[in-house]
Amino acid sequence: MPFIPHTEKDTREMLAAIGADSIEELFDEIPAELRIDHLHGVPEAHNEMEVSRLMSARAAMDGSPMCFIGAGAYEHHIPTAVWDIATRGEFYSAYTPYQAEASQGTLQTIYEYQTMITELTGLDVSNASLYDGASALAEAALMAVRTNRRVKTGLVLLAPGVNPVYEKVAQAIAGSQGLTFERLPVDAATGNVAFDALEAGRSPVAVVAQQPSFPGTLEDVDRLADWAHGEGALVISIANPTALALLKAPGHWGEKGADIAIGEGQPLGVPLSSGGPYFGYMTCKQQHVRQMPGRIVGRTTDLDGKPGFALTLQAREQHIRRTKATSNICTNQGLMVTAATIYMSLLGFEGLAAVARRSHANATRLVDGLCAIDGVSRLYEGPYFHEVALQLDRPVAPLLATLAERNILGGFDLTDYAGVDALLVCATETKTDGDIDAYIAAFAAVMT
Amino acid sequence: MSELPGDLLYTKDHEWLRREDDGSVTIGITDHAATALGDLVYVELPEVDQEVEAAGEMAVVESVKAASDVYAPIAGTVAAVNDDLADDPEKINAEPYGEGWIVRMMPSADIDESEMMSPDAYQQLLDELDD
Image 1: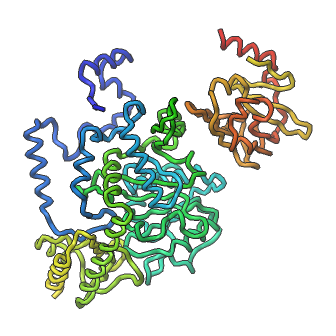
Image 2 (image 1 turned 90 degrees about the vertical axis):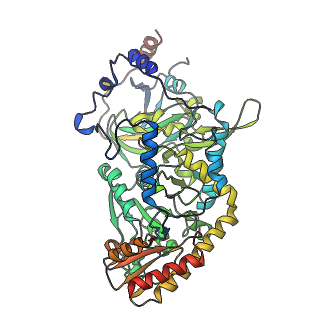
C-alpha cells in the first residue's frame, strides 16, 4: 500500500477544520525553550542534486576500513536478497499497519518476526520491536515497575557488564520517572558480577544482566537470575541475538527464566550505517504481556474462518489509553524488522548458529594472535563469544589512531570503562584468516 | 436496561457499593458502565492489603476497544479481589452486580452516603444520560 504525504492543500484544510491559522499556531502551546528551529548539522532546504552530492561526500568519509569494533553494533554479512526484498514497494515503509484489511503482508511479516524472536529468546510473546537496544532497556525497566507492583523502590540493579550507553539512555528516559539505576559489584578478575559481594534485602524492582557482557565476557546468568528472583526482582536480559544461536535462551536462565528479554536487533541483517537506524527487540513471559509497550501483531480468523493478522492488545497503547499507555515514546522499526525477518528466514537457525560459531572461531584466532604480542594480555579470564577485552601496556588512543591510518578500525577504547589501558576487539564471520593475520601483524608493528 | 438492585449505593462514575455484614464494602461497575465498555477482555486488579485513597485508581477494566480506570469510591484497604475475573472478565458483563464484583474494601472511615447515590438517584442520572 502506498504512503503519500499530505499536500499543502491538505494541510490548509486540516488547519481550517481545527481552527488554527498556521502550523506555528498549532504548536503554540509548546514552550519556546523546548523547541528547536533547526537540526544541528542538517542544512536547510537543499535540492535533490545538492543532497546527493552532500550525502555521497559524507558517506565517502567512512571509507572502507577493516572493522574490528563491536561494542554493541556488529558487522555481519548481509545476503543481497535481504535488502532487495525489504526495499520492495510493498514493504518499504517504517509505518505501522493500522489497517488490517490493507496490510496483511506487512502484518504477517511482523508476526513471523515475533515468532522468530520468541524462539531465539525462549520467551512467550514479542512486540513488533522498539527503536534500539538502549531505549528498549528504558522501556523494560518501566515495564518492570508496572508489573512488579509490590516493589515500590524503583531500584533497578545493573550487572557490571551492562552496556554503559544503555544505562545512560535508560537514565535519561526513566530517571525522571522515579527509577534509579545502580551497578552490582564487579569481580575484577572476571569482569562479571561479584556474587560474594552482593547485598541482599534491597528490594530491587528489576535486575538487568547482559549476555555476552559489554566487555565480552559470559556472565553466570543462571545464578544471577536465581539471586534476582530470590530478592523479589524481575529479571531483564540484554542479549546479542546472534549469540543466542549458541547460548542459553534468556527464557531458560536459572529456575524461572528471565521475565523480559531485550536487546539490539542490528546484528540480524541491518548494516552498521554509522549508527542507525537499528531496532530493539523485546519479548516477555505471557503473564506480563499487558504491561509490554509497543505494537503486537496477532493471528486471528476472519468471518469465513480464514486465518488473518491484525494488531492486537491495543488497549495498552497510546492511541487508545492516551496518558496511561504503556509507553508514549515508542514505535516499531518496521523496515529494520522486515530486513531482520528476511535475514533470519534466509539463514535459518542452523545458519545463524554457523555465523555465531565462525565469529567465535575468528575472535579466538584474533585474540590468540594479539595476546602473543608483548604488552598485550586478556583483561578478564573466562569464556567469550566474538568480542574480547585486552589490557595493553600503553595508552590505547594513539595506537588506534595509528591503526586507522592503515585503514584498520582496531577496536573500541575500553580505558574509561575498565579504568586501565584496555581495548575491546571483535571479529565476526566477515573476517578471513588473512584479514585477522593482517590485523595482528599491523598491531605487532605498532606495538614495537 | 435491567433493573438496578435496590440494596446498593451508586456513584456518578458508574460504580456500585454494597455494605457487607463484616463492615467491608464490595465494589463493582454498573451494568450501564459494562455495556458502554463492551465485552471485557481483561481486568487489572489491585493487590490485597493495598491502601487506596478515595478517587484513587483501584483497577483497570479493558475491552477490545478501550481501557478504563476504576476509581475507589471510598478510602480504605483492599480486603479481597475477585481473582475469577482474571480468567473470565466477561463475568462483569454478564453479572455486574453479582459474580462480576471487582474489589472488597475495608473502609478507613465511615462512608459518607451523601457522596453516593440511591438506586432512584442513579436511575435518574442514567435517564438524563439517555436524553
